[in-house]
Length: 362
Image (cartoon, rainbow, N blue to C red; front, side, top):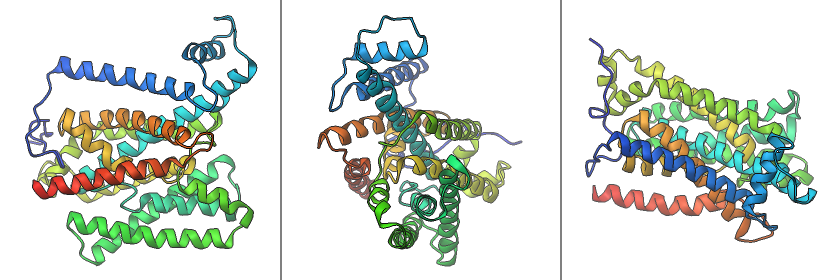
């Protein structure tokens, strides 16, 4: 009889030593509530902090006035209202969506590959998405309107993913470390081709594209948010529905197969959905690395290895992390915006070193 692995039988990808205690239900519910409150406070801070500080009371007053006109009496200037509603709030929400999406993809990739180093950036998926987005921005034009960049980014991400899997199979790079090396190699090749596209493109747009490749949320608009929101919601619902199968995949292909899971097909579908999420996120934010690597490991240290809890918790923490990374990017060199990819790269690089050291000791 087919059984779905329970949190106790599922083996976390990395957090195996020491054994992580399963938190009591009230404690988990408390952590969820705390996480949601922190996310709301983080977004509020992101809207408030900037070259022109805006008091938190004004922030929520503007939001309330936009949602329910007449609910509060405006005592702020039109300029501050524009800063809150037109510039900073869409940017903070996009940061939350992108952080949640990249963390979700990282958690899924680490489960289906049983590779603690799996990450859309290290596996070359983000590079493929960047290639597709650059192709749309500099060469093809918006032939499908606003959907052009996300669609080509998705195609690029999917193509890069399939290329990594093909090269790994050809080179017999089946181990976790060699799969990551394969992803890095493919990433370099794809980024070299992306640089060729930039070289052949309009020089006047090259600076903007290069800044976008380093990661940036400055172009966030309300009209753009619907795409990452819809894709993220759909992917999160599906991945949460197959969390039991993801748990089985972390144990091993043979075990998953004996449970009735079509391993090869399930892994391929997971890669396709992960590529779709990554492609859309990269299309609107540029290449932001290491979020998908760091966040799932931190989450497993708290909630254990059951993907039914890891996936939503990773989304929540990923959203909070990227909102604060964007705050740092906007304030470190104020009034200039530092590309957010530089901030996540610095933090992620140090985390990567810690992770390697932890594995060496394990």
